[in-house]
Image 1 (cartoon, helix red, strand yellow):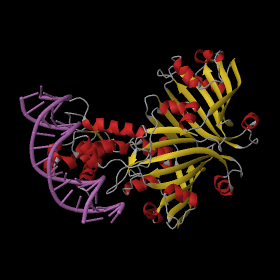
Image 2 (cartoon, helix red, strand yellow):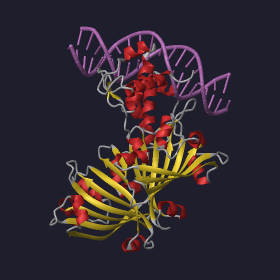
Image 3 (cartoon, chains in turn green, purple, orange, brown):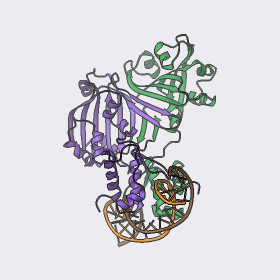
Image 4 (cartoon, chains in turn orange, cyan, blue, yellow):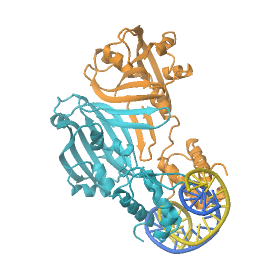
Length: 244
Length: 244
DNA sequence: CAGTGGTCTAGACCACCTT
DNA sequence: AGGTGGTCTAGACCACTGG
């Protein structure tokens, strides 16, 4: 025996859900029907359904057929890191306008987060992000010089920085995101087209490689009427992320 | 039939572990032994063991006896749901002051999220949360009547609502959290001791059971100088949560 | 090697939901 | 009333772990 039957069944059902063959809100076949289709007994079928239930993919109850609750996205890390990816997942058109990019010594707070010496340089950029052509988020990013160098020559009005860096082999492995709220300053107000003092959702993010070395420290500010951050978590431990 | 046998078994084994009858690092009886002791077949025994495994209480593997890993599980889900738990984890002292609790028909937006009919009642409460005696967060919670009833008689100035509900067997299985920023309204300003219009971090949360039925819809507002939300995610998929 | 858990079968009865 | 999932039984074979 290779893979257990119940794992094969769970994978098959996940594929049908993800592929849209069974849409959100629609009912799964009954356990009896699945038994017949896969020529097996109820044991493996129920084990597979329990796995999907744990993942939050399906719900239901006694006497009722199981119902598809969600069609979970595949790559939680990437979709959480990349504004571009998230926008595409939620059906919006992402855009961007570079405001500035510079090679300079970052201020001491940023340097401390990136574990830099006072003399070290970093690549900093300010970029306005658009959703369906409306200004939705302002990002102030700082990359350690080694990683940021290539950005100086890249076309930053083209698309996702994360996709670019990953394609160049940069090992973006994990990140810590901290959320709070701030009042819009003058630059925020100008670029996001809100009043000075308007409440903005702030995300500060430290990204590091698999050796634990910091690569990026950034601060993003969201217009709350155009963009929010959503996290789904369940008791089984799985978590998924979106922003829209 | 009243309580299913596998639940009774799980409760009995939990009690033995929590009571120290089977210490951390010690082995559980074999499945066969448990079958004999409780005069049942392997089905219910395995279902009970699977529940303990889910809770992180026991470990083990093919060919090996199950081993007690911990007497009290610390679930990532719970630590993300519970302000009390998070405060304790970060070394702060949590506190709370109940502002009001009511049984009423919620407004239509809340009712829609909880999938309620216009005539349905729900339990709503407003509670100020403290960190080291300073007002840090204001929560406006709504529970479906079935779940919220027990809160009307509970001492809500005592501690965690999530711990209370879980101990009563309420199946809190998954949640979706949405973050943005809002300006403080008059109630926020009074209780959190900030100016009207001050930026606050807002979290809206929908919690549901494993059948996919909504149980709770809440809105929390954080003073950004006293409390933030932090999420760590990595390419390997697992995610962890804290707020401080 | 024997013991153990992982998996699967083929039934059965009950409680609940829909009709 | 019939369909459906929740639960339970009493077997069976396999893969892995341990002495």
